[in-house]
Length: 270
Length: 314
Image (cartoon, rainbow over all chains, first blue to last red; front, side, top):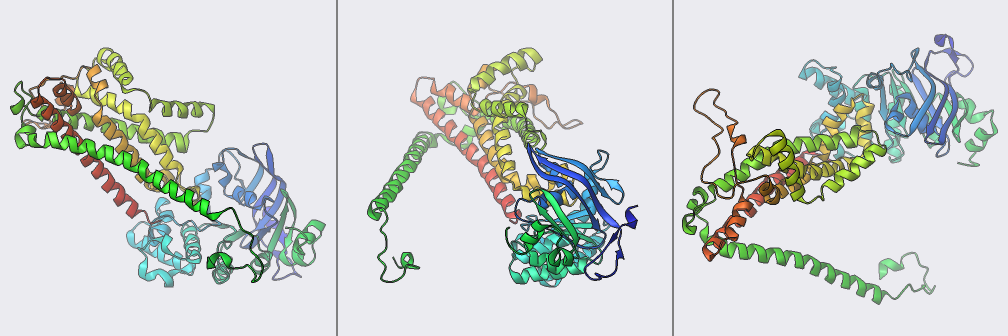
């Protein structure tokens, strides 16, 4: 049933492109203690391409992003209800192995957070714990190709064994992206990946996202509507814990159905 | 002055804040008070060390280290005491450090935060402040009489391990709490298990802090006298424990664990309570050795901490 759902994408607004749903949320609620952070969210995220979550601060977009790889499990007071179906499997099911789930879903955080280890070790860590490389040379190959795909290799190839934390902010964020793609995920979650970066570093990350979106399903939370417009094919607007509306990015930006979306897009609040 | 004036349009009279002279005076006063407070501690410690060195240093010789205690002050030595101290600390560390670190990791990373863990946390902190003689009484009842471990090196090590356990647990927890969550999330996001996150990222980052706790704990254990006297440490001992290496297979013996012992602070206490300046000089010398031993062990730990910090590439 999932495979039959059609998404209209910005690149081809006049025709429906058939894309399988990679992630489907059904009636997702999140509570932090007594406070409800997300209310009955229903949304589908298409396979491959970029989907952006926008909305004012505290609207629940990051909370929802963290539901997709069960990162809210780490918060003791957080309670998630509802179903999140990835490839036909409800990941909120008790039987789901969270460790295995997260190996299929990479995450890039708001603040670049490389391990306090060398550049090489940063990228090699994931493949190592998942046993993706059987030999030292295979591991090196994964590290190099991941750094290349993250567009960082040329800048760091002379100093792979220097500290990852010694890189600039933009380089650190690309290192984190390399670290995420080294474990061959299917989905990459990005939580405001450019909020700590300057415009040039931001542009590089956005280029990279476009490239990665050919293979991976990318979900990005962003404060910047321009960024959402630039990088995504689909956008969802969150407000006060509700998913107000979602659709092709150009529809959300040019012809939103809901007044709240319109007010936010036109800068009346947020 | 110029730095303050930036942004204020020319010709506009600037509003004066509280008299700056008074604020500067307070600044200076605190500097002096702080310096004095620091000096009180340093001078007291320096005087103590100087006094110890002045009376004890002339007694320090190879013979002093290699002789057993004696009724004659000039040939009495600390062989049994320093060997005893080292062996007891070895047992203490071997038991107390892994237990303390493991408990600290469990409480901070694994245990659910609820009323029970709160009660445990408060009690662990309180245990660090319990007088050491209480541990001695507990050990006498539980280990010596209850488990029948005797008045041995093993009992002493076990007792001191209990004593330093809360110190190490508290230090480990604080060091682990200081590790930023972003590091845990980075590893969890890659699909690492909780144990992998702890072993590969949290512990290495917390290690310098953990070592600080270990240093404080071990130093405290080295100087403890009361609980060891309570469990029946000997005060006059003219033999060494069974050697750990034997000439017959399996070449290793743990018989020494069950031997009687004395430690440096007990030896010093014993000498100090005797009449006569000769023995008092011996006590000062033993005290000096104890201080140097503590400094030496701390030096090793500080060096290790420095090496670990350098390996972390924040």
